Length: 230
Image (cartoon, rainbow, N blue to C red; front, side, top):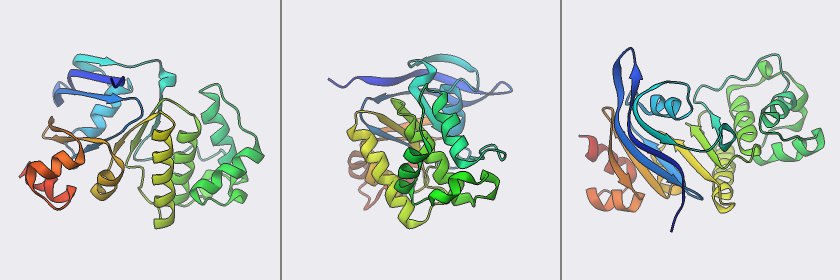
């Protein structure tokens, strides 16, 4: 029987007394990739921030381990400009009681096609895509049991996207879990074991991509999603 790493039960959350997440219930199992999809402004980021403790819930329950259980990459990722790439990776890992040498980091950056020479450069010299690669790599290297990734493919070239897909798949194979938000529904269909559709503050569907396709008789997840919310 599958064991969950995150349980959200009847969660209500928002800001300024406005409910943005209404009666949300979902669970993420160990060793699965779970996708959260929805339009801009639906409340997905508010849900994630509430899970992370960055926003107070109005009511409901969130059951998860310690803060070391989660490694999080936000949609708008801007590392401290005064750090080098290597310093950022080392700082990120230190929060989880881990260390990495420059030699090890040089080997790891190849996983996302990042030039090792840039490890010694300040991150304010990085392009958007390079910063995204750095953030993704640091998130994965923490070895946290649950990775929460908000638009992880943002700013990535086709080669890097393929490499990130492999890292996500490898994370699942290792028994860890990935909770990802993405507007690239072809990636969600390819990578995710289960998905939740978030629309107008509510979760209106939870199940596998194949179940979602079957329910709406659509050729792809994008068509099924648009049918579901129309």
